[in-house]
Amino acid sequence: MSPTRSNMRYCPNKEWLEKCRLESLPVPRFDRYVYMLESHVAKRRLTPGEVAFDGYVPDLLTIAQRDENESRTMDMVRQYTNIPVPKLVHEGNGFNVFERIPGVTIFEG
Image 1 (cartoon, rainbow, N blue to C red):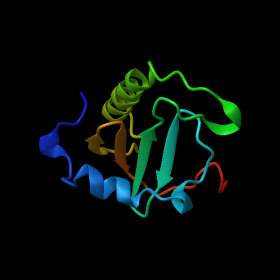
Image 2 (image 1 turned 120 degrees about the horizontal axis):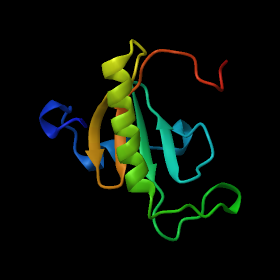
Image 3 (image 1 turned 180 degrees about the vertical axis):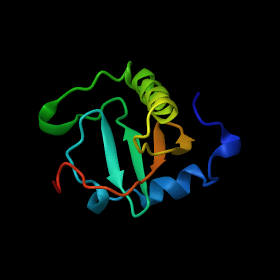
Image 4 (image 1 turned 30 degrees about the horizontal axis):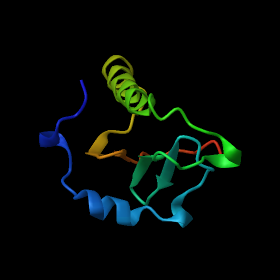
């Protein structure tokens, strides 16, 4: 089950999006911008007309469904395993914000 607004930390869309700057973008964009913030990770979908890294044209019609699948998968992993999984803290129009959990990224490993 995806988080509901009642169990998410309130923060207006504009406030989250203002935190998403180029310096917090560790990887090239494909179908989303992924911003590594101090205690959160924000994932913003590309919009129609935006071209991704190296000319890649994302399938914008399936991104919302993939976001929902990601959320449901994380819920399932959280429910049935002891693997640490970040919680969804905000759902915005075209972007999601997750808590950032401690660990080593693939870029640091």
